[in-house]
Image (cartoon, rainbow over all chains, first blue to last red; front, side, top):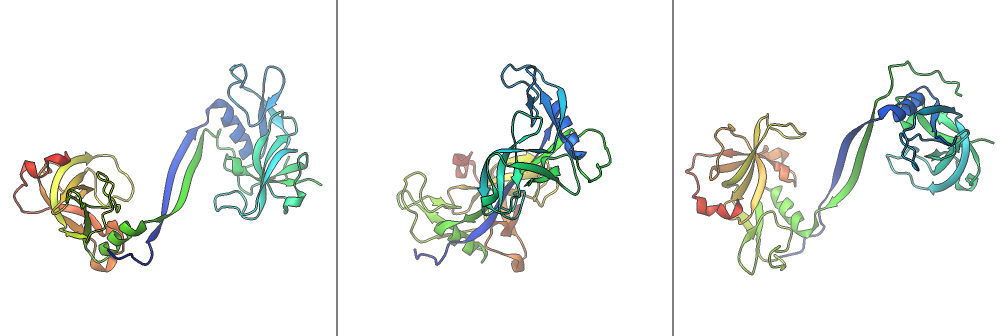
Amino acid sequence: MSQIEKALTAPHVIEYTYKRSLGPVLSQFFTALRERRVVGVRRKDGTVLCPPKEYDPDTGESLGDMVPLKDTGVVTSWAWVAKPRPQQPLQKPFAYALIRLDGADTPLLHAVDAGSESRMKTSMRVRARWADTTTGAIRDIACFEPVD
Amino acid sequence: MSDKKPEEKEGPVQVLQTPVRLEYVFSAGQSASRLLGAMAKGKLLGQRCPVDGRVYFPSRGSCPQHGVPLDGAPVELADKGTVATYSIVRIPIEKVPLELPYVTVQVVLDGADTVLMHLLKCDVDKVHMGMRVQAKWKPREEWTSSVENILYFEPIDEPDAPYDSFKEHI
């Protein structure tokens, strides 16, 4: 059988429209985001988890003591995204970063709009840039930006 | 914390939408491209195994039983066939052009030795094994190189096929 010139190609999209029920702790986290606030949860030893968890990762105890946090923090780790993909939070080069918010002891994963890779460094200070409209989702924080 | 005003309160956020979307460019490869190219002309092309002569449709270019290339001349199949098995669907899913409840069937096309899964437009009380069916094609001007050129199968006025002709596909 003769070889054909070129194999056919077609777009193939798989989409799962998941909904998840948040439960009492994450419900408070996302409700706060909708109001442009960030909250964490306090463990028995006084340390604060953000994003909050329902159960203490070490002891398994139920957690629920919510703590207001600032929308500023420090970058503890980062990776530069030179070519953002369509679903990613920014459509220009940005960094994915772990950000420990002021008042928290654990880092939150989010995007940092630093303009260029050379401006990124561990221990840099950042502040949340809030979205124009909020819905109760992590993208209510559009991204973080460096604080000079 | 922010200059922007908080949104109107609408009660606590209790559910999060977390869609997952994977975008691929699917390459059909030589064998399926040939099949789909024929589909654009309204033809159903199967491929024959050189070892035992069984005809595969749709074919991926090699025999799953003997592991040999199916590179002989393609075999043109009829758009008629026999219902080997079926299932009645009562839960809606997207992009199905039939109203609930509808029937999905495994059709053995005349000339093929494999089953093709498709829809059957038929009273759900009438469908049965051995029923003779024929493809309902889209209007010719809407044909593309896609298996979606066949909308569904429909019953035809022919006597049922004998059990032995499709029993291996049950």
